Length: 210
Image (cartoon, rainbow, N blue to C red; front, top):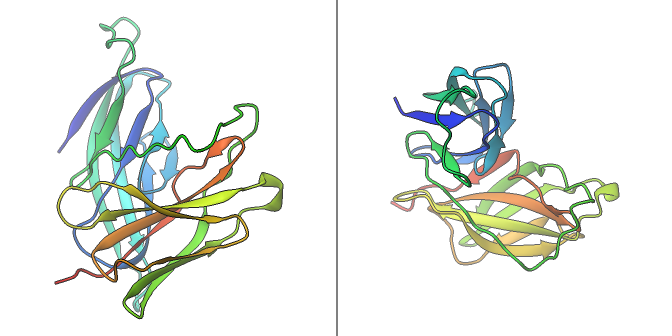
């Protein structure tokens, strides 16, 4: 079991990969204190109180014909204010088995911190057609003023590393990856003038290539 030590109020980024399964999958993080987070990559969380917290990641896939569910666990120790402080500016990522950091950043948009970021993209689905991977999702609410959707992908084997694969304008909710028909994991984010949303509630995992 993996263990990680952090300070109170220190933000961690949770990320996950998989070694088996295909289709649309939802990644739910249970932080051991009643709080939860949803997403496959860069899911932020900070603990308010010192303690030792068991973290469970639950991955649920589409029914086929029954719902698939897999769980894995880790521990986080949160130091109290009397404990030795961590170095200033320390940034932590918490990994479960097959979990690695994915830190894609873009500077194409100048964000206004006074504007709320969009919510997480929902309704993600995917399929293979004509040797291409096609993704669709539910558009965000009009009042969020989304300007673009970004699509990230990572190989499903070897080191997991999400890269920005493409983007579509706000009036589109479909993306075609013409370069791959197998072997990748995908998620989608939404952008507005306030910044980029967290990763989509679900991810799409295409079939292995072998």
